[in-house]
Amino acid sequence: MSKIATVWQKWTGISLVLRIFIGLLIGAALGLMVPQLTGIGILGQVFVSALKAIAPVLVAVLVAASIAKAKGNVGARFRTVVLLYMLTTFLGAFVAVVGSNLFPVTLLLQDAASEAAPGSLADIFTNLFTNMVANPVLSIANANYIGILFWAIIAGLALKLKASEHTIGVVSDFSEVVSLAVKWIIQLAPLGIMGLVFSAVSQNGLEIFSDYGKLLGLLVGCMTFVAVVVNPLISFFFIRKNPYPLLWRCLRESGVNAFFTRSSAANIPINMNLCRNLKLDEDFYLVSIPLGSTVNMSGAAITITVLTLSVTHTLGLEVSFVSALILCVIAALGACGTSGVAGGSLLLVPMACSFFGISNDIAMQAVAVGFIIGVVQDSVETALNSSSDVFFTATAELHDNLTKKEP
Image 1 (tube, one colour):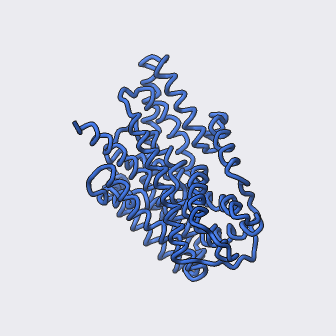
Image 2 (spheres, one colour; image 1 turned 60 degrees about the vertical axis):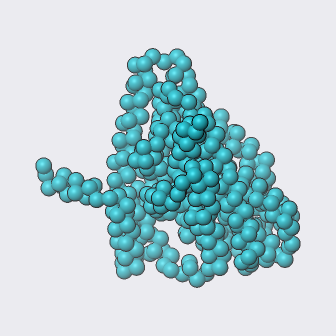
Image 3 (cartoon, rainbow, N blue to C red; image 1 turned 135 degrees about the horizontal axis):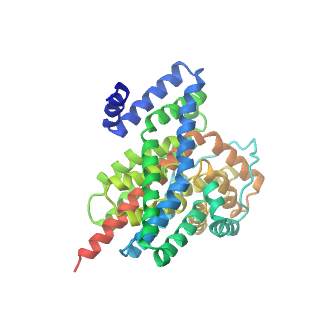
């Protein structure tokens, strides 16, 4: 065995989480000491680009293959996981309402943003259903996960009904090949995280914590409360046992990576690998994980709600309890249409603001503020969203197993 192979074997023998933590520390140190070495940041860009490139293919092939060869019935689990996704998204918005009233934040609305935003909730669902039936090849090329899921399910059902065992075997073998490629990419995560942390620290330093600190603290506080209090309570209600060991593992192995990639879509391969390590039912998580990256958006609901209420506080508008509840519903439904890319939730703030009669010009200024703090806000949001995809997938399976054991 060559020296390079020996070193690689020893390196991969170390826990991936520990290796990522080492990469994090090295990236932060280099970002502070030698910020001019911009080439280090390329490692992060390459890692995220690789994950984003392979994730659509992975989802399409694995979902189709899984449905084609599936023999069991996981319908009850899907109903449970969708309920969990929607419940945590709504409760995320509710926590944001409570937090915004306990710790009201006002903004200095000066510079406007130029990005286009959806005009209404109807626009969100129009785009959602349009994306669902988009060209399947273009869906993979554009990482349109709603379209990928829809066509992969159709293809999987068609294979199951008409294809021979040999054909299904070929599709299954191809899915294993793609999975192996993903595993190789994941082994490069420490280098990727090092590059991402270097870029964040060298470009932004620590100033982001002083400017707009109160708003950032409110957002991160609400997301943290949902992650470590609300979600475990929901899980405990379904599985009737301590959910924290599972939660910590999901945060550690999925949340850390999602924090730095800032993309639920890019974290899909990481989540699938974690589900495999947790020994969850492959037929189930191959669909629930990409589904979660689209509709499990409690972090996005919090961002939409907090920024919207910050605008109302700034303008001195009164928000009644009924209006706040309606805002929770709007934020939750809107968040489900958020794309799985960095900054997706911010562009839905004007839609929520319109419910209070706030003009698009003023609302887009709040979006601009959101982009300023987005380095931290979007990282925490993605970590919450993506890690809870695995958390609730496991919860749904444990609940299903518990239900089957009951007389």
